[in-house]
Image 1 (cartoon, rainbow over the protein chains, first blue to last red):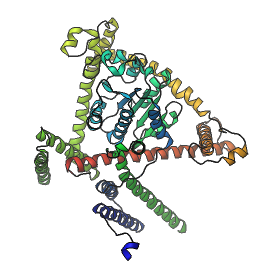
Image 2 (image 1 turned 135 degrees about the vertical axis):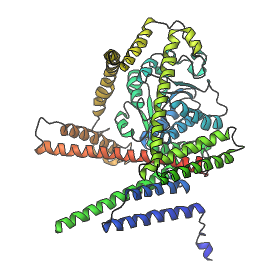
Image 3 (image 1 turned 120 degrees about the vertical axis):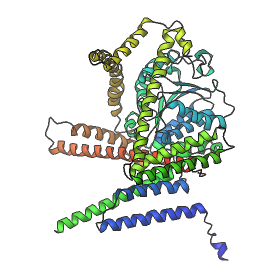
Image 4 (image 1 turned 30 degrees about the vertical axis):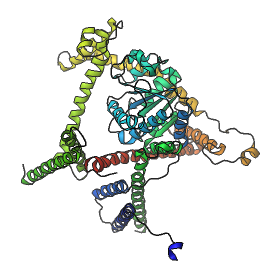
Length: 317
Length: 270
């Protein structure tokens, strides 16, 4: 009888892991609070340990949150949705392996979206190390998920050119001058993706993925504004606040940090259920992010409570 | 060298070799060059742990990883500079023979004498190594600074000054059709009239009060002082948002490294 009324308590190993790790963190924070109240020193290594546990636990026992795209992310998604098949999008990998955990998921998700929509992609990079990051997209996204897409016809990799904003200053008027061939030495004129494309002004959308210099700011300054080219970006969290002033007048949308990437992945899976089983690293990363942020907030609260107690004590004296 | 240091060094070496062997055995049959791949993964894990060990305290492993990183970065950028700037950009425009030698696509008809100017300026830059003729390198530096300033001036003036000012002139009454219309169509979504108006007012007041805070020709008292006080609050909230984003970014990087350790090195299925 009872079994009809109450659902059976079926805890998986992952659930037990989640509960245990949360209990450990909560208990630890309580211990920290009591220790601090007793005015005992808390070593900085203890703080590091807390952050380590709060990051590791959700990785080992994954917790995936539902994300809803904010307008600034939705604008990028909608722009790609609005482009007719055959439109040409330039995706610039302006980042290095150090930034990759944050921005590689954006590059992969946007590549998926463009390819499933039938858009043609020109891959390039203003960071020399971006070349290796593109290989990751090629091996993990394009080849396994879009085996029918053909290099030079559906996408092309023109690689890296030294010169930072100097490169952009040239390709705003003439692509071929700066990129006479693709990375494999195929001449510009024989690449089908470049049919009808003479300069950046002929592109339907430019997306810069990165977070350093040269990056999205240079794209806006040297391509977006002078050429009236639609520009969007996916940037590392550190840079995101600096880029908000360009939205929406000079930059149509932005994926800011891993949160932006998670929102985009969520939107993609929502619109294209065929990607339900594709990797969503950004969504998975939101678990550690949430727990680590909660722990940091707990530190701030504990610190402030102690400060107020100290101040109260000082007044009484 | 202390006995304890020697023991630790020996222990780490043994663990490294053990990890390499286990990883190679795990990858055998799955990848062609599994011994090399296993070494690279183990070495990456060793370097990651060496860098993280600084959180405990400074130590020789951390120093080794740090120096290796600096050295490899310098070497990488130097070789990239040569292969992408000199070989990639200059040689295809200078000589067909050199292009064939370096296996780069020669650009016929693009030769121009002006391409020798960067060659000369580049050589002048190397004069910095000479004690007596080091001053000559300033010519190249002056050229670099002047060109960069000239190139950026117009772009920044347009994008970061004029366009930013015009972007600040936002309507304070968005799509205003009277109070009745406003209240009867009250919408709290991000694209709703109320939220848009609040956003525009925030931009307007934030920019004005921020500017007032940095205006020092008038004493910050009375109404002007209150606006300045509001300005500092706006600045603090902005810095707070930046800090929040920075924390998020750093945690993402930590997640990236920990995922590497657990998945790629230790072989967890995550």
